[in-house]
Length: 124
Image (cartoon, rainbow, N blue to C red):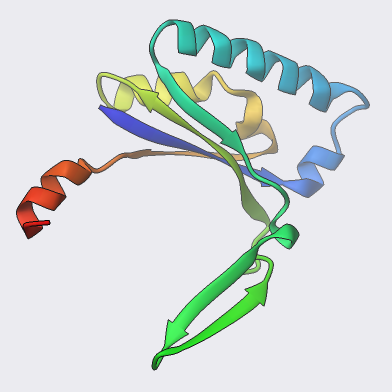
């Protein structure tokens, strides 16, 4: 099964880290990611730029509006993600717990829906 491991950051907690701690955590995260990739668990990973560099859009009554930054104001924001392969949710949570980012935000683990099954169901 595939799972998306989403890393949410809280800048106030990141900024409170002792000098050099972020780089130490990031280095450990890369080393761990390389191990997971070698074991066949990590399929892909990406970091995201700060929310202020993004755009949010919505369509209402056939009118599109585009706003700077994130749509919702939140203390925590999506900072990156990992696509992993795991036997089940328990293993996915175990893998996610090995990343250090729960200390400075939150880690969400969500099963990836089988899009091919959805395609077949809707005849696409």
